[in-house]
Length: 545
Image (cartoon, rainbow, N blue to C red; front, side, top):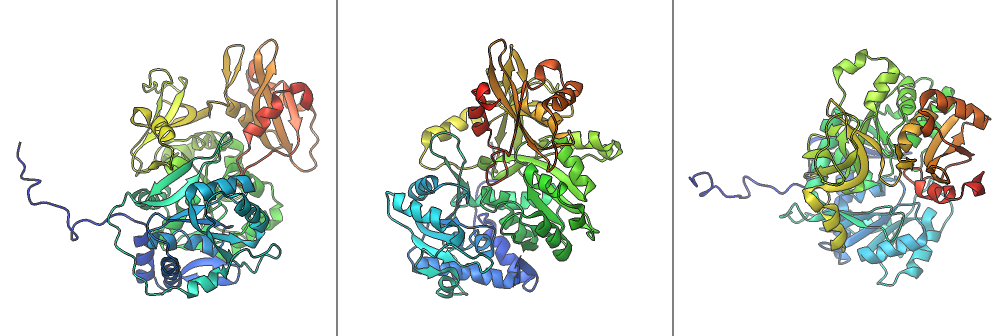
């Protein structure tokens, strides 16, 4: 075998550069220095200014002794400092850890200890939680930096320095050391585990770079898009969109919290072109007062993920001018790793069928290597028949390094050479993946499998249903049967019989819920319905009747 193609053809500075999203920021600042980068209320920055602020951030961290693989934790809403935290720490060689702002003090204390956080940026809104978390920590306390957002009143400062003063300590001409290994960690995200301690998911520079580009290519984003932060930036690093928007040299329109009227005002005033969110976010917009979106004459593109979106959400979004593209992924896959790639022939279908096609989890995004559905017993690919259920698995560059300080869990999730998601799905004849349920959410009634997602999709089509979640409740005859928790639209008062009739029209008899419970549904900060809470309630059907 000839070695002609390897002899003397080695990597060198001229033909190889480690992939890092820091390069996106550098390019945006050089090529488009005066284009807007970040908008938040009256505050507006250009890409030149944002790059300078991130260099100051990195320099100030270095002066405080923060270096390679040190953790910089962040407890912030979607404000400019959180966007800058996706670059400043990385420039210093550190790892950013964006904390879920809806977690309790015990969970935050665990994460700060587990991550060995050296620095913590925090907002006054979370001072009670952070204050308590700091008292619960068992390890060294981090340096606390307060981010003072003038749009929020209340809370208290906990740190020794405010963020803007901290940036002033840094050098605007700071030059980061050249990254030599793209496998180096860039961020740490904790899973929202329902039992036991959350696991720390580690991303590398290579994956962040690739998914940053992936979002542009797989979504077809034009240059200089105007992106509204309806998605929590702490969640999977905002599905990697902080890095995407630097690559795109677009505009980040920051939003402290999702308020439908404010969302429509920003879409109108800032000419927002793109946004992301869970189904609950789009549901809020669909059900908002129609007067609030008067005067918006341009189409907005929206990515939707989280739970498999009901077709009714996709239909409703289209009716108010938001074109939905469904993506799927997990914290472990940097957020979106598959996309329901639209086919031209779908345009000829009526809206309900189009929504059904667009609601699938689809195929891999361009820069993820592979997705499959495998048999749970033999770990072999299932046939493309739309019926045979198995577990969704991923592999490729857009998959985490592993779980921090948890070798066993890392080995288990990568068993068989794939990342195992725990989501159950089929592959339809056209090769598109369609989730049927989480393995723990399948309802087995009299030996028959019932997909909670299928029942929920039917419930969402009832005119009075704002949100729905279906879980198993014990049954003496069938073992378990579906129990539906329903959040109603304002002013709606359907009877249980109304919903039964609706479900009987669209579902096989054994799939119809035997019990309906009305009330607000518990949700995570990213809009996902907390089914584990509902499963606990449903264990005693008599208690909730």
